[in-house]
Image 1 (cartoon, rainbow, N blue to C red):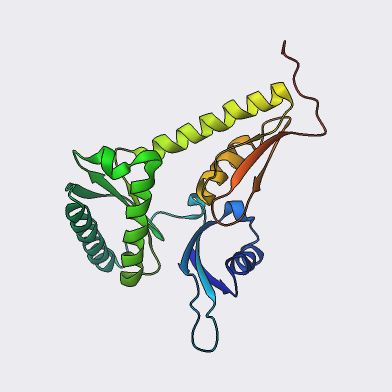
Image 2 (cartoon, rainbow, N blue to C red):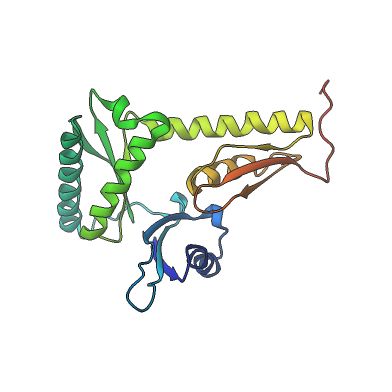
Length: 227
């Protein structure tokens, strides 16, 4: 499910989305589609697009406009292929998964390490560019770009980091602030540690990239060093 919201500022648009969807900001996968432009007499509103968590999506029914979906896929796949070729790192692009409101594409290339980039930054940049194009073809679908299963491996690493950091916090009694993360990454950390006894998490900072602070629950004492 995909919904769009708008407000005078980014935070106002997000607040409106949170109220309507009854979700916290960390549970929202947000994309800014219009940062607002100042015209001659006034500034236009900021518009955001919100994608609900994966467990909210259902597999596409076989009878749902299959022909239209295939045509859309062909256009997006060709666009991604042309994009990486113009970058100088050609490869093959395959459909990885199809879900309502989401299309997953996988790039297979001998230059995959460059396409992924440090901490996946190149992959995220490609995904951002592709979604600008894809939004013009079909604004109701978000495209997820992956290569060499990087995103799944990255998620596993984030969860391991969350558990490791939480254990350090429990033993030391001192909170720990993780590096800035996007909403999806922060949601992974919050979810992973949600049921961990003696640990609480919260997001700190402004904008989409915030830091997660892992702290000891005030109601429970930290573990002793011999525990």
